[in-house]
Length: 269
Image (cartoon, rainbow, N blue to C red):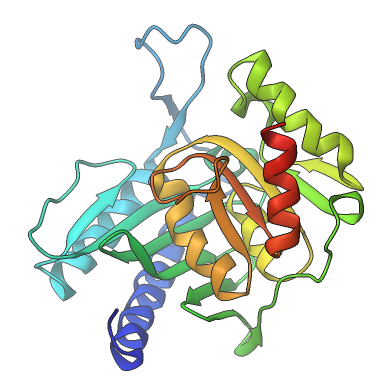
């Protein structure tokens, strides 16, 4: 694990790069925008996996800045091929997490950037330029910055699923009746369940406003930067087996150990 000063250096860089890409995204948000379907022609039937010029330009900007600052580091992003490196450091980019929200004019999307070292997430940033918010996390610490002020983030103290607020981006995340039924066991036990949110749900979990997020079919770039934010605020993020979430897949994020274990028990009962 790098020392605190080194991690802070990488965090400052991540914030600068994510926020620096914000004006590109804002130039397209709530404006006429051509949308391509990445699932088209892949035998996916009616599947819709949208991508826009905003996604591509934001990622290109971030990659260029990362290459300038850290030429020896690896890069994994959603829209371009991975940059393979011998370095233990790899940057993870999701240029517009929540593209469906973005093209609908809903400000629940965000620019994600994380840094991993040997399968550990050291730094995570979510920048929402329309709201002027930046969420950030490092080991043992998470903050939200808005209008020049910083708020220390801590997850909620809810310890029972029956009193928890549960979020999930969309029911289509669960590709089979069996997986959907497992999610429904948690949803039925929770005090309140809401769909929507994308990356913003995880940040609100870190903020103590949401207690649980349960999702599936995630890619590493969808979740890795958010792990640092949630865990930095005191939360837990794993897959549905209670193992590392770094590879994506089926994810459960919880405010604390008690909620996390209850959610796992319901998912696997």
